Amino acid sequence: MASEKSKILVVGGTGYLGRHVVAASARLGHPTFALVRDTAPPDAARAALLKSFKDAGVTLVKGDLGDQASLRFIPSEFGLDADRSDAVEPARSTFITTKAAIRRAAEGAGVPYTFVWTGYFFGYGLPGIGQVLARSPPADKAVVLGGGDTRASFADEGDIGTYTVLAADDPRAANRTLYVKPPANTLSHNELLALWEGKTGRAFERVRLDEDAVLRQIQEAPTPLDSILLSIGHAVHIKGEHEFEVDPSSVMDATEHYPYLVMRQVQHVGGILTI
Image (cartoon, rainbow, N blue to C red):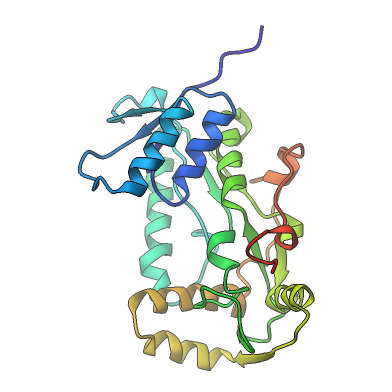
């Protein structure tokens, strides 16, 4: 008789990534619970999302996080590794310092935890074909931070959700970091732009910004969000913070521990890298 699936409570289940975790948990057969705030505005999109949860058998609850013995804590991680990053401001104080503090709190709380690191999400990093501030493909010019040869890692949100649920029920992942860093989705900005040129059949100019220019743009960005995104881009594309090898003695490589999961690859992403 197959072992009983563990119950999974997703905090932030209606968020950008949380909805993928909820969907993966239900699809993999776990009794799934999504913590929902009563104060959230009842808009049509949120109502449709909650209905999809219910249709998938997900239970919507007000969560009680007081029972430590029943918990496995998996905080949100993306973009930069809090324990590796030397990002400049404002990414340092906005993300890195905060994420590192959350990690230390999780380690000291006595609750089994798993940190999941993912690099860039497809939905954030690919619509602009790797351009940090763009949300659509380039028309004739592409802005490249640095020389464009530093490699960055990308992962599909649905795949991240699946890996997260698999790790939550995997004793090997307890008190460790799981890296979702697929080799096929680790490529330079120049390589990403070349893929787009191959699919569109047209070439375009690269506007390359050296480190000094990027640092000036961080300071002069028109919005705080642009400044944060540029400082993350500086860490990834100038300082190469995605270019590290996963040490199997201390952390877990998702593609090695769950080889049966077929991940979506950058060159096969419909609607983003296809015409």
